[in-house]
Image (cartoon, rainbow, N blue to C red; front, side, top):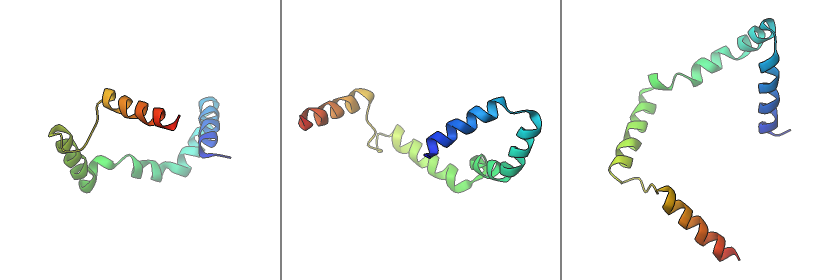
Length: 81
């Protein structure tokens, strides 16, 4: 079973689960949830995010506009024909 299928089944289950089951599931993954959502207290993460933001603002990141991206995709598709 793919990760996407598992994710969908879990979402569906959690959406209809009673409070007792929700608490049990939450207790199993609570520590991991806290670790994952604590990025803003990770100095290295925040520093990297700021570096990327600065590169984007200064046009140093090689980012493309939606129009540029669509143009590239169109050329690739045309070359595949």
